[in-house]
Length: 144
Image (tube, rainbow, N blue to C red; front, side, top):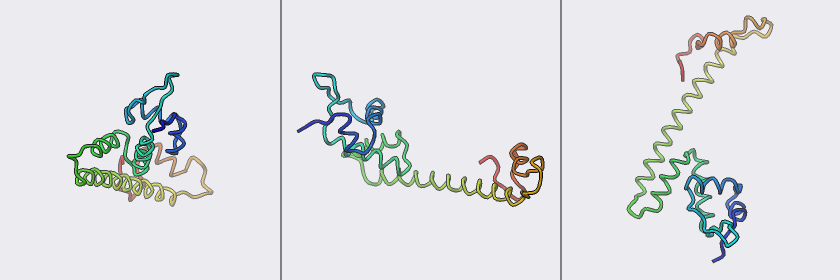
C-alpha cells in the first residue's frame, strides 16, 4: 500500500498542506509515520478522514465536536442514536443563531426606516442607537 505525502493527502482531500499538519497537531489525525528522510507518510485511508472532518465543519460542527464524532465513528459500541443526538444539538444551536440574526436584522431595519437621507450626520438614528447602546423603538431584542 503506497503512502501519501502531506501534499498528496492535501490534494486528494481538497485542503491545504497546512490543514493536514494542523489536524495532526491537534490530534484529529494520528501522527504519520516518517520516511527515512523525515517526511510524513499517510495511509490512503486518511483521505476519507480529512474529507469527513471538512464535511462535518461545513455542517457547522466545531473541531472539538468533530473529535467526538470521530470517536463515535470508530467505537463499535456507539449507536446511530448518539450521532443523531449530537446532530439535534447542532440543529438547536443553529436555530438559536438564526433567531439572533433575525433579531439583529429587525433592529437594524427599524433603525434604517428612521433614517432620512437629508438629515445631518449628527441626527443619524443608526449612529445614535449605537452610541446609546439602545435598541430601536418597538424592538424587544436586547443584548443578543
